Amino acid sequence: MSLFTKAAVLYEKGAKLILDEFELPDLQENQVHIRILAAALNRRDLWIQKGLYAKIQYPAILGSDGCGIVVNVANKEHNHLLGQRVIIHPSLFWGDNDKAQGTSFQVLGMPAYGTLAKDIVCNYDRVYLAPKHLTNEQAAALPLAGLTGWRALIRQGKAQNKHKILITGIGGGVALITAQLAIALGCEVWITSGDEIKIQSALSMGASGGILYTDPNWGKEVHKTMGGFDCIIDGTAGSEFNQLLEAVKAGGTIVNYGATLGTVEKLNIHRIFWKQITIIGSTMGNDEDFSNMLDFVALKHILPAVDSVFTLQEIDNAFDKMERNKQFGKIIITMEDM
Image 1 (cartoon, rainbow, N blue to C red):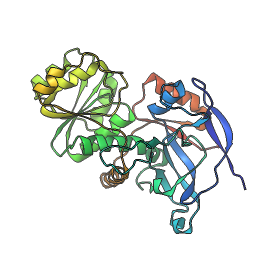
Image 2: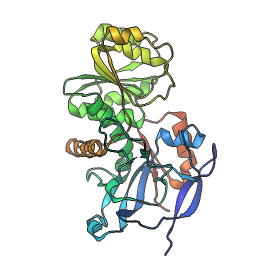
Image 3: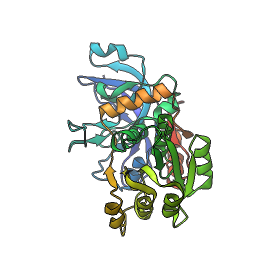
Image 4: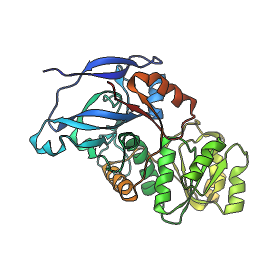
């Protein structure tokens, strides 16, 4: 028997998402049916909506983050999941290489149907019990940002207790959860922002200090006054990247997971070799990263920051808020009243 659900569907480049009905795919071997309680937006969703993403396929149901209840399973051996509150691991088809994703890698939410829907069908090995201390909204805020931040900080950045860490662009989901992970690890955490209010909010969460990147020489000043950072976790790139080369310690590491400010022009290559800086990329994470991140979040009772909550009917307003880039934490979509 065919099952139908409601979803926010993107039908063409630059269009608004339309609340529409679509047919759920039949459960295949090793799949589960999840009733979504809450989902979260990522900047990836906005890029796809604007057509600024590779290999977009329409119609698209966006959304890489979700918390929900398992309502059906294909195999009896997965019956233990029925009725459980779960979150979904958004990395699909990582491959066998721990160092990097393979050529078949995908992110949940295009081309695979994502979480901006009342229901979703996914492989059972993408399903993990939601940390008990989190609300539905907090649990939905965790998967993509938490996974990206964990891999960048721990696997690629090799952050340790007492390390001095700088995290750029505070306010976004990845930067915030990375800061929370680093603080819980016992690092001295500093952040950058162009917004003094966001800096103050980060300080109230336990950051040791904040830097306004509107100062054109902040990198040199930070290195001069503080001795620089052991590791910098960066999701912005762009014109600010050369400031990071100034701010990092000699022999330090810069981990980059994104480029919201665009490409790096006039890269100061001399700083890289003279200071013997390690620059390493990071994208999402594998199953081990996701499991370890969840264990750490549960152990330290970390609460992902939630900026605001919208209903699925208010999806346009949620996208508008993300585009204005004023949020401090994740923008959540709840499926209540659906």
